[in-house]
Length: 295
Image 1: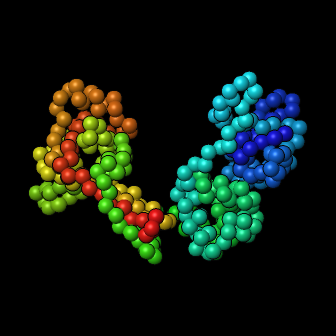
Image 2: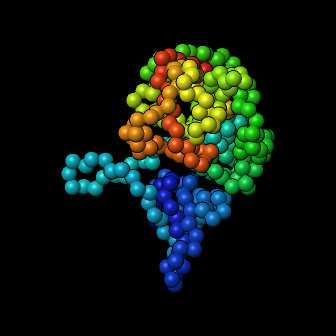
Image 3: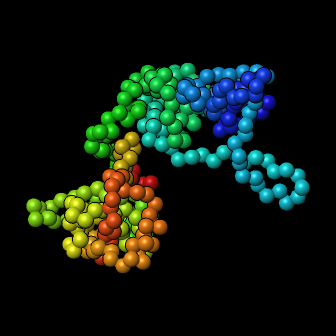
């Protein structure tokens, strides 16, 4: 039996062939991919060391094949490293604060270094027992690693030792706006300045959002507005923001409305009927990014 990280391991009934348990292989103990394996079980989220028996088999992760240029089979490509999730960033930041290497932390937490690397480098949601072992190994708390303080405003972490604030080009701003997400629309109301979070889409270099007629965000129509999008990386004390300034107008053309409905990547999180599309065509587009100096 041979496996790679990311493959599935299934344990089946020898009589009926029904899968009794399955999990993801997150750690190897031999370079050739032979057992034993560290398996993260789908039913519990826990990781255990497994020596597969005759009732177990590996389902290989589908990987792109390299061009062969002949008839010999291509070697499977190694799984591409994914972008770390919020848990992975918090975990890596806690480990660096303690000055521990990956191997030292894995030994303290009684887990395979490959699995710890997997947790740091890919989106993951390990079980409570695993997080508790990591918290104990890193002299922190379960709440801190899990981000249970997310109800608090972002930006409560320490500032970078040598932060660098740089202006973004219009092209970078457009790339960060991307095609959709959540941003804040700000304008002046009869009661004073106000800002509201809205789901938005980008089409034809304009920002669009849906709302209900008579709602608070609908008050933006006919006004000069500011639309802001940002991303704060709490664990790394870095981030960026993009500001769009322009006039908000209601979309009244049925063809454009229909096109927007087909283009929209997500429904408004607030739910309910929101038939009014509002367009903000930028007259000014600016942005800033905070990074460690020299990066």
